[in-house]
Length: 449
Image (cartoon, rainbow, N blue to C red; front, side, top):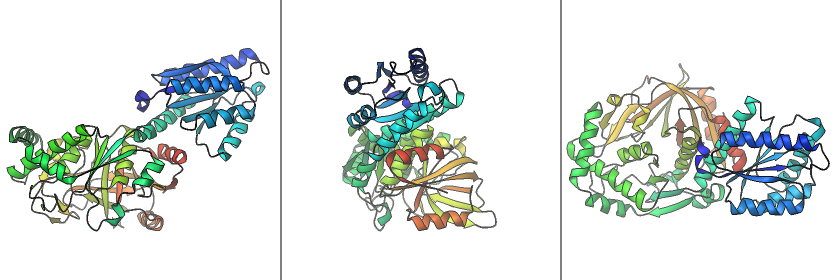
């Protein structure tokens, strides 16, 4: 699960002097056993936090153990000042407050609500879990919460590369680094497009030609000449070198006019590089769209599947479908049969084909997916369900057509009203509940359509 690379702590709040001791200890142990079942690396606080001294002791242990996520089992009522102090001292930690909510003798809900009513007013963020450890629903919910926290932590710890600045005229894709750091905390490394061009020039023909030949042997067809194919493979190798050099978790690039448009003279576009890197686990986004890149990272960590970034194209009212498009940088692993992929020149809007470079052309296969987009101010996220279908209208590049869970015109009216940008991201999994919890934790407004 997504929690494999985070350290989970487990602590219990409970007063064994004022409540039935055997019952309190049993609740603590049952919770610990479930957490250990779901999480590989668990740091256990072996005593009950029931005094200010125990609270300070626990804070020291949790900090020293570098716990990322703390599961607090609220077994009984304790002095509210103890939990206030705990949240204040651990304000940089992610916290799940858990109440079994079943044994009346322990006042489980009174204990939980007294804590949450106070720490909420103090501005602390957390998620809550209700239900005894033995219930399957409790286990499922806890696993979900841990996955959500792990996804946010993954982005917080990420190093995102931005090659170049925003493409000309694309104001709504202009990166807002301060907002990104405020909400997600990730590091944005500004890189020079010229460094990529220089690395491209140093890549040997043999390595790039081998990749090009392997690609030709597996995909359906190619309509670009060998020089463009090899040059685009060189660009992939150059971008991979940059990813390794700067230890990047994800990468966005200004793709035109220097590459798409061939101002640099490389006869190469980054579509294949972004597709290949995404398949390798390094999410890539074109047009320097960092907020879409962050959206894609979130979708990937929540689902474990490769996401895509798309433009909106049109509504087909008779079928209540929307058509979506982009040049052709989708991860090839999304397609079951690589023979469905064609290598084409990138296009503009899926209609007018440009004369240089290489993109991967295929339609997103039928299936249920989630649409999502975080605004470039990072203060809103939109989510919607979509059923991708076989496209009735064929565009050039990476295309898709789908039926939304709601009326298409209603969807777009909300997108326009709320000021969302022209890109939208998608992944083949239902993750709207996870996105809702992410929004709650991050303090981002959720627009669920």
